[in-house]
Image 1 (cartoon, rainbow, N blue to C red):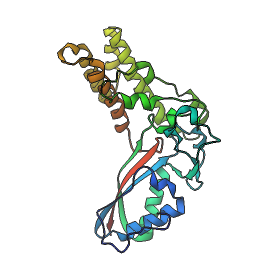
Image 2: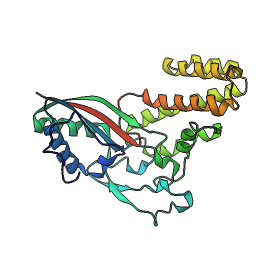
Image 3: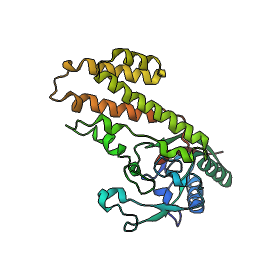
Image 4: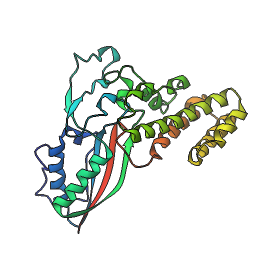
Length: 283
C-alpha cells in the first residue's frame, strides 16, 4: 500500500476496506497518496473505510503530544507471554497515530485534490479501555489487564472476577492537559464504566437502596442497561443454567461495557483504533 493503490486498472468498487490498523503502517504522505488514488478510482458513489491507531489511547500516554506526521514505535508483543514482553528483546516497527481532526483534514484535502464530494458517515473510537496494550506495560508504567477480563466474560463457562473489571486512570493525569477534550471523553467513559461495576457490587451486597440511587442518577441510556442488569440478577432462578454468572450475568456485563463505548459521540482518536467510514461521490 505504501506504493499506491494496486487495483487502479480494475473497475470501480463500492467499498474500499482495510482493517487491523493496516493503514497506520503508512506515513501521512503515503496515506494521503493512497486515499487520492482510491477517491479518484471511485465512479459515482463509493465508500472508504479507515482503521487507524488512535493517538490519545490510554495505552500510550507518551504519544499524546505527538502528531500524525511523526511515525512512532509500535509492537505486537501483546501476543507474547508477559514474561517475554521485554522491550529490548521484542520487535518494534513504526506506525502513525491519528486523532479525529487530523483524519478529517486528510479526507477534506483529498476530496479537494480529487474533485470529489465526501461525507463522513461515522467516526468512532474503538477499544478505549480494552485495547491490546492495556494488558501490557510496554507504553506505560503498569499493566491493566482489563482487556483479558472483559473478553473472557464471553467465553463459555468463564465466571470472571468483578475485581478484574476495576482499574484506575490516575496515570493519565500527567497528560490530561495535552488534549482536554480527549481527557474529558475518557474520564466520562471511565465514570460510566465504574457505575456499572458499582451497580454489580450493590446488587451482590443486596443494597437495593444503592442500586436505586445509581440507576436514578444515571443518564437514560445507561439507566436502561442497569435496570436490565438488576432484573437479571434478581431473577437468576428463572434461568435453567448450571452457572448463572458464567452463562448469563457475565456476558451481559460485557455487552453493557461494550455498548458504553458504542454510544459515545464522534471519535477523537482516544481508542486503540480510530474507525471511519467515508462516502465519496462525484460532484
